[in-house]
Image (cartoon, rainbow over all chains, first blue to last red; front, top):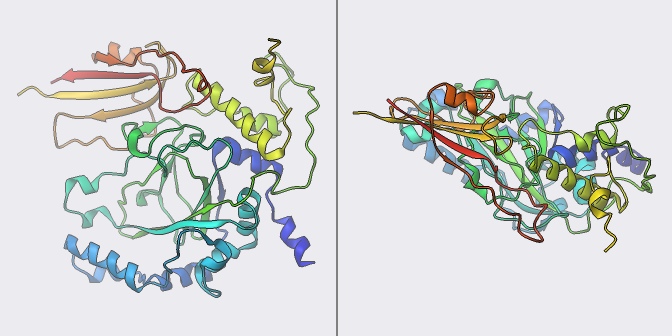
Length: 318
Length: 87
């Protein structure tokens, strides 16, 4: 019975396709308030902590270091199996054991993933900074050096234990950027990208990002501290059909490009072909090709296609 | 002293007439700051509108051949245009 319940929380085909297409999945308010409070207590947060202190900037560093030392967030060795990373009854264990999230993790990276690293991001209100360059938002970047993997991917859980309001400068991210092979802050020159999004969410929200998504932290113009806890998780197995036992077989009954009766709404093929507002006319098409390639891989359906994007260039008789 | 304002636009193809998909502003006046994520709406819909508005184009990216074996890899935004205004 328990097994059946867990199985029900695996991602759906459409959610998997959304992840392949956009590079993230949002689970709003998925963690209950009790766990959120437990997490905040474990890191030593008090709602009045900022008001009581002076605004000397050195205090911010001290505060951060203190949290690093005294909080219950464990020092976990890289490569530790995720299941062994957090103590039972700890807030972080509650987070990764949440049935919906553990189903999503299993669907994306399998049932025996490893923890790469984790980190507590603390963004203080900008008024506490005196240096002008510290009052500037973080540049766009991805969380990796040049990563040549085309099929294997890591995931990063971003857990927001408190509400993130608009003026708190929640993480900015670029949907659909995860196929772009760049080297970390090399893209910081791109200040704004059409279609960029900013995290605004209720407490207990978790976003699962593809490791390569372009993102950056915003500036916190509120009076509250913004917390974001990141857990990077890597697979230890091929990411093929981890969420389903279904046999996928493309029927090659393809709708042609443009001159058609419309692609079925919310179908896998529609999701994979949705362009982002920032896609260049040419490279954006390559991003669609890359999505289809990844879908072929994770479904083990080597003939899958959408509107002949790949079949067209594979039709080679030489 | 005259100062330089910089506008960087990323366009959807190599033509200045194409749509703006990314942008950044930098100011000669140090009281003004252009920063990541400071605006979700582009300053212009198309690149040419910057010219119409008095910006002077001083650099644009080259068109490069796709290296064999790497034709389908996507990466940096390709169509970058640097403009200036001297104030």
